[in-house]
Image (cartoon, rainbow, N blue to C red):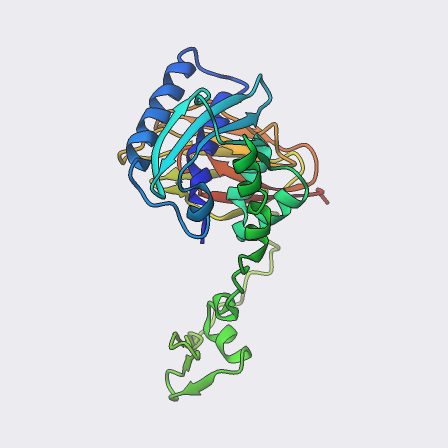
Length: 305
């Protein structure tokens, strides 16, 4: 289960907290929220949260590097009713969090566990307004704790014939061999290519090859739907360039770094343009796509040898 009731807010957080904001940013934010309101209106709230926030008027207070923002959320009949900039009147629930917490929530692989941790660490807090709502929402933290954390599937780590064999699965056939997992996924062994040398072999050139010049710039293409690669491994002093080559309906691009890479933060830019950042210290962090907000990639920066 994914906590889709928070999805409309993370994009707005990243837009409003840009260091190099565009002059018409307020207009862009308003248009984005309006579009989200159209997309979310009438959609079901996922269980079990629908039993608690199925009929609420909530204000979500998000602390940012600026003055912070407030987003109003209204639900009715266990469905989303409206999402808008600014606080709603007579709220029954107030939610408080910050920009980095939401980025970490959506960039992690286990959103349920991340949400539980954020609640335990009081990075996300809430309170009901009025006696009835205080009594009602006091059970929200208990409810989240009772949600089972999905177990990782060991077979997800099997991506090759060798992995399949190492996991103890059956191997059939002779040439080629095939390994089949318990869930039915099959991997075929690719035999090594045998190249016969000609009878008259020219002596090999013993001249040592010229040393390779390591490229200190890594280009990551931003494609329709997210990043072209899931991870880059670089050294201190290297530069990563995120190039927008999108051609679909959503052509804009934006880059936002999470904890450890807070300074990695671009404005919105169009196809053909790029944003780059030079990493000056070792770090491991998650980079979030500011347009496709559930898409992330990792940057691993090691000490140069």
